[in-house]
Length: 285
Image 1 (cartoon, rainbow, N blue to C red):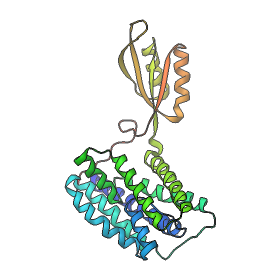
Image 2 (cartoon, rainbow, N blue to C red):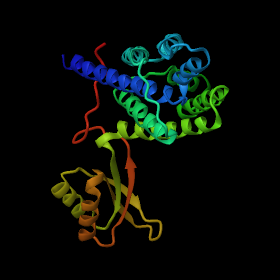
Image 3 (spheres, rainbow, N blue to C red):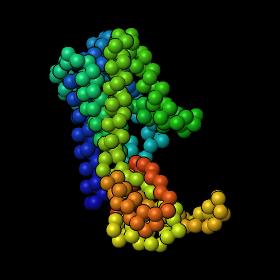
Image 4 (cartoon, helix red, strand yellow):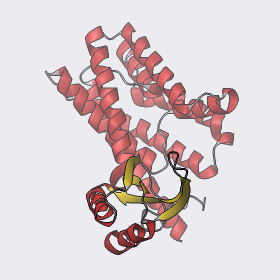
């Protein structure tokens, strides 16, 4: 029952993200003559050139691609992908009568990137897909060893270049701005409040520092074996993960325990486990 409840939440979020995307693409992209990447971009181009409905076009193109890639996807991933793709097409059809032309194309590109990017970020965060390009990227990785990012980037760039059949260079540039803003929003939505900082601490007082981390921050820490390159002395290295707002407190308590400690921080984009977000159970279908 818990698993089905989790699936219900994931599907509801995918539907909400698809609705946001459908609204943004119709209200902003189409209303202001902007393009888009992936299969959605092809659907917009067909609308501009031939007047075809982008909802029906994207559905007709996406469904065969998802059927082609179903054997390489888990059952749950496949179901989520189909829900995301079909719901986006339906929302594109539903919101088709609405348009919001803006006089300022820069504002239009920023709005388009923010709305569509936030919607796609929600879909991705809850395990869905809306575009067959993601499946094609997965097939290319399995067949040719290409990275997902490389395939998606090349495909999106090709679609934008193809859109120059209809778009002028000004709108093409604003489309790129929208895509950059959208990519950033996707990252922010996916990371959410779970983005964090990983700290590596090299100190001669590892036990004291780790106890302070546990006492004051209520965070765990791991000891790693290390050896100094300068003096060849063995040392215990502390590894811990804290939220962004806790980095200042961590630096302070490390400095108070050992002013000579060496500390580095790096970004952590996903934290799963005890004390953080628990990994979603995607079984049950």
